[in-house]
Length: 64
Length: 133
Image (cartoon, rainbow over all chains, first blue to last red; front, side, top):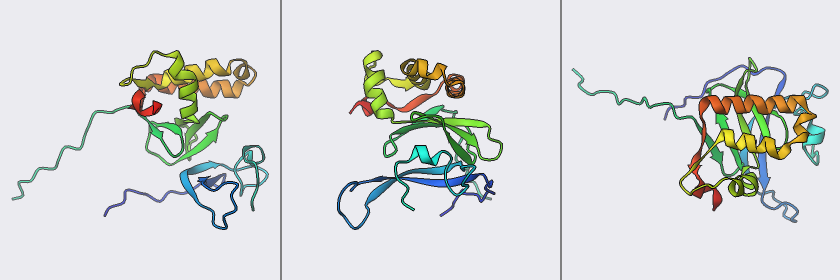
């Protein structure tokens, strides 16, 4: 098995995000079930570099 | 002496945009580099080189709905046609109309994406029959 992945230095002004489509959205399941649909780096918010830029308008609910 | 020949793995460059089912998006990236995604609006996201921030591609989100609502009725598409990315972006610009005029940064992002699609003569990697089901 060979991997072509390379380690690269990541700039400080980006965060890594993973997008998941929940299968039981609105249900009463204790376990969250979903599908990871895509992922990647996005620019960090200047006021909170731990979060994606414009996070307050891009997402409905902040869970943590 | 080893007489085995290495297989020729070279193939002509195919400017294809990938339709990603689970993400319901089309992604067109010209260079295989680490990248960062810059959201322009709910439809277009630019893909930039992680370090230089140079444009390397773009992503079109919510593509299936856009295709069914705007592209399929407008173009007389045959099942074995492959959609050109330029057509997709031009249709998106038509649909957005005035919304782009009042947002020069968004307008410029669409212009950059269209230019890249045009230069690459890019088409989506599956025929209409694979999108319309």
